[in-house]
Image 1 (cartoon, helix red, strand yellow):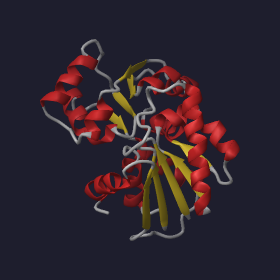
Image 2 (cartoon, helix red, strand yellow):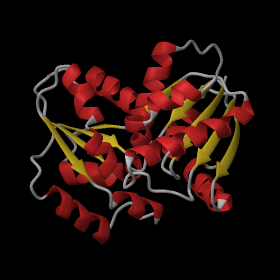
Image 3 (cartoon, helix red, strand yellow):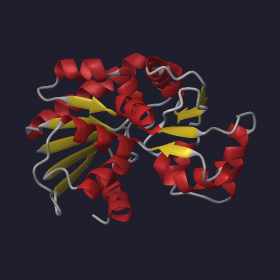
Length: 247
């Protein structure tokens, strides 16, 4: 299968990393809308317009599947993308809800949802989790984490101060949904901050779990072909990909 991975910027590379680890695809086409990142502060209609433009871009590649790695797009624009696509599309929000439901059996478990302002305002994760009968949910918009990751700040004083800023009134969760694909890059720091008993739900792993439950993969691809595209400064994207993915 040939898959397209769409993100507002570089964060979706964490999903690509999970796909590579599980060797699911022969060809991966990554598109980051780096000229217009972040999506998390934009209005719904703008997000939908950008998402449909991404679908049009992917039509150049005869894909078998598109993965929407951006949580904000998954929360607001998945239906519109599917209406305009010639191949199936799956998003990280639905996958994250399913992964949380599979990993957490106690419906009263205290779950903290982290994401951009737009993702949190959509309540997409909360709606999905309530449908799965979870009752003890907290949600926090943590938009500062995105530029910190973009600056390759994965720990240290600045990040720790942002933790204190965002989490000073947060009850220690039993599980955290990393509702932005940038956030797995700071997962070690989050784990240390909240403690080893807190379960982290990672978008990339959640997508792989959903793919393996819905599709049959008869072959492992140890050396897939990957092409990276960006709406601005594609060389910067490729440089980050080289560091994160060794590609």
